[in-house]
Length: 197
Image (cartoon, one colour):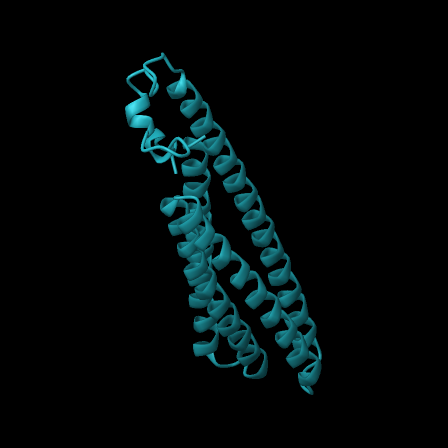
């Protein structure tokens, strides 16, 4: 939230708000420098808010990095699963899917908490909206990744079926578009967060 308004601060034990003090006089008719004090207090709160927002965004980017690593492990695990065919090691793959799912859920929960803090505590709804959009696209990406893995197994199990090959290509294109959309949102987030500094 940009610069706390001075009239939010009241002198203790009086009805004197900063709006009254802005005339430059105290209750005894003496000149006061309250406005300068109020401005400094507002600047301090603004700096603290900006610092907190920066910390939250750094954590968000770290979580995005963890998500990228989880996808890499997911893909490696699926390649190992396919190479175990035709008698697939399904138990090991199911365990991997379980662990990856837990990891993604934990990342999503923390990002949603960051989104809420940006909006409710720091008055940055535009940044919170970017995080919400990233979450939507990441959900889409995960669903497409799972569909693509299944389609690849279908191709391996039935190599002569052209419909499976087409499905793989279509899913790859959708996945690429989704990843590009995530990159664009992250660029918007970077731009809006830097613009406010």
